[in-house]
Image 1: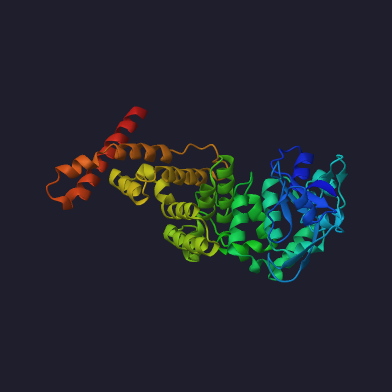
Image 2: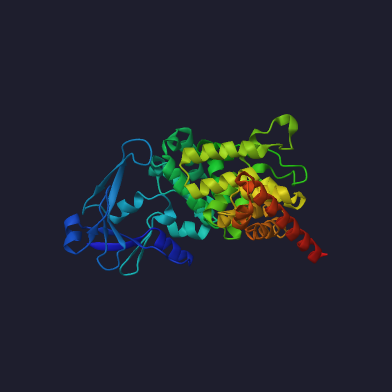
Amino acid sequence: MEIYIVGGAVRDELLGRPVVDRDYVVVGATPETMLAKGFKPVGRDFPVFLHPETHEEYALARTERKTGHGYHGFTFHAAPEVTLAQDLARRDLTINAMARGTDGALVDPFGGQQDLAARVLRHVGPAFAEDPVRVLRLARFAARFADFSVAPETLALMRGMVAAGEVDHLVPERVWQEVARGLMEDRPSRMFEVLRECGALARLLPEVDALFGVPQRADYHPEVDTGIHTLMVIDEAATRGYALPVRFAGLTHDLGKATTPADVLPRHIGHEIRSLALVEALCERLRVPTDCRDLARLTARYHGDVHRSADLRAATIVSLLEKTDALRRPERFRQLLQACQADYNGRAGWQQRPYASPERLLEALVAVNAVNAGKIAASCADKSNIPERIHAARVEAVRAALKESREEQQ
């Protein structure tokens, strides 16, 4: 029985990156051997065990065979005679197909170390084409290792997988899982660039793919189309360390621009309403979690109003706060402002440009929260007047707060 550290831990160690998780492969053992040593079984599809002390995962060396379409279309064979080289051969990329033994020796049968040095993402072998999830995983690695290129032969293989319809068999939950992980990488735009280059973006996220080639407003760097702007937005959100819901909102905030009639371009009148409908359809299809879906809907619908906050009257600002449920959900409202910040600064040369809307709207929110709604309600003889009275008081509070703010700046 031999034990090896495999995959990402070996790759990250060679790159000098922090090693967070360690995965182990056990060669020459049976499930009975593992149980006798105190390991706890956890694998359903193939034998995986938890170490009795460290609780790290140890998997028996295995091979796999394609039996159907999609991610689940495989059968696995784990037995003592399966070698380490056979186990590594089933992995996706050469940089993930290395192992290190207990003696510290590196096992690298597919040139992973060389590809690390060359900054190349390359598939291990033709079996890559059997699992469509690997298209998403490679794109996600491109977002993590932004200075890596995709080997031409690997890109060609991915295009063939898309053309063969393999990615069409991916289940929505797995697509969302990989997209979410990619959005949380250092340079998420790279994921979508790679997916678009191999044709998978049009199959998995057609609403996003449709943005490329759609012109922006003339005063928003017309040489940069809406698709490129969207990628700049999610990179800006990543640079600022924003949470997943904010990054997803940045990805989807402009979807409606792809449906703007050609005769009104580069204007995009009413695109917020169209964006909202497309966001809802995308979220339903991919079964996007509620927090990401709700923020994406708010951002699609109201980002234009947030951007125009300096021109809005106090009554309109109060209506905006009420429609976005800012009083009851202030943290989500702050995330909406973060998504708008990323949208505003996600343009060439605008990264450091001052953006006053968040501060202005947060000042308005403080003023609205200071209004004693209970006291107003108690003073109303006619209870049907309560909502109107509260709204009017909030408008006056915002008007006074923003006036004081302007006077302080002068």
